[in-house]
Image 1: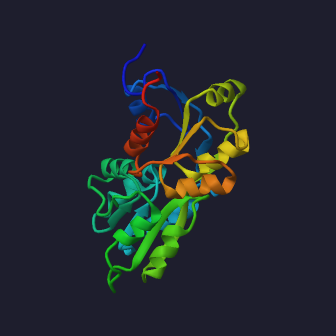
Image 2: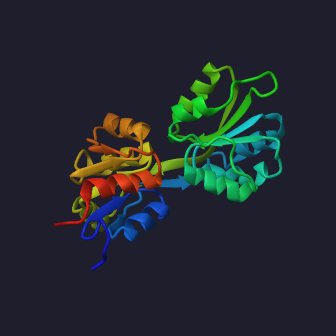
Image 3: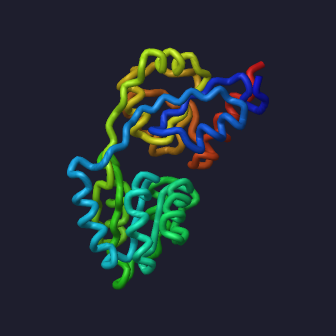
Length: 246
């Protein structure tokens, strides 16, 4: 039997692919059940709108990326425009974008929320008002509307699309028999409700308030929200709530 603070505990992860969350939970001793609930694909137009937007990237003062999927789709182009400031939501996205561009984003808010990102950007100036936001087709407009309210000239583009995934029968059984389920995005929480209804393991942990709000709006009871809105914070919250099975 594995050892660690989550030894004997089964925890469900719901991101589209295995990654750091799964690894950290496993290192803590958890039996990790990965049930992807969203599928990430290119935008319906095949990426033409994104290509058009980034072709003019040099005219923007800021490039805002809200996920690692967006980072993967614009990182190579952003590397050619070192004068464009980078801002991201999330430390994982920051790492991804830094690897692709060769420089660390200028803005990575401590709280990984749209509101924190909006507040973290410097005041809009005459020479730095234009912002390009690369996001998912299902993304809400919190970042865009917040920056516009602060005086920025904002252009948004769908860098990719997400669709809900229906889990298999075996995945359903494993998930519903778990001690906890984690959600790192609102779209995954919505997909859970689409697949399972309001039924869930006894512990439901959201990475932050935006994800919690999406889950609650869909009809899911969220029992805990990570104090630090990051993958590490999500693991810490699960560990604090569950601990090893007696």
